[in-house]
Image (cartoon, rainbow, N blue to C red; front, side, top):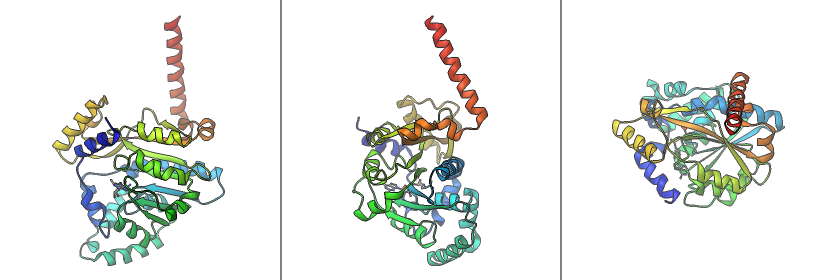
Length: 312
Ligand SMILES: C[S@@+](CC[C@H](N)C(=O)[O-])C[C@H]1O[C@@H](n2cnc3c(N)ncnc32)[C@H](O)[C@@H]1O
């Protein structure tokens, strides 16, 4: 079956949230996602921070991040200003935000983010098809650059190509599935023109990553998955969504026992880098504490010894 058809089927199992993605301000988005305890930008944060830290040691420039499916600048807020999803839920759910216009929310947030701690020396370019969400994130200073594009259907504009030439890190949360290998085929040439960025995707276990990995491979990227780790994304919106997702997982041969059966979506982490960068420091050494790395090495050695004994 075509990957596109598979992704369309899988998306049907998920609650449709299109109506909250492109409002003039993020209040509805945060109100609805709070009900589902949407947390993937939070669970992804320590991984993104580690990657930024490693890149800062290797590069002299301010790290340029391209956030795919950036929405209202959620990952930018969390990384630049060291905020959490709970703080953002509280911020955009405040009583004083309730009876205000979107223009007033923008004006309030311009001041709020201008006064917030600049925790991380990064610049974030956001890409999303939601024009209003990008406009909000640009006006409030959360994004340093914004690209309104649906790369599933349209090519990247010449202007956007120029903006993406200096990207060091590509991030995504909650976005693969909406974006398929078609989008990756369309932005990879632009970001890979200079130094190859690190490409860091949090992907629901529901969505196969193979086709995107193939596309990355074409452009010279080696993809590693952080094995044995899952990342909480959100609760299921309904029993119906839960049932449909379990069915999809079974169809794909992914065992949901003790994971999605517990009532929430789980994501996995994929990192794609140049062959040279991946060979220099494997993903476990980049991201796992030393104790866990040792455990994994023992496990691997144990497996190898077992295989040798069995072969002998
Ligand atoms: C679940 S939200 C995730 C937003 C943000 N990354 C986060 O984790 O809070 C998915 C985002 O993908 C965007 N999106 C969906 N389809 C897209 C497409 N074809 N091209 C670009 N963006 C898309 C939506 O507008 C929305 O902002």
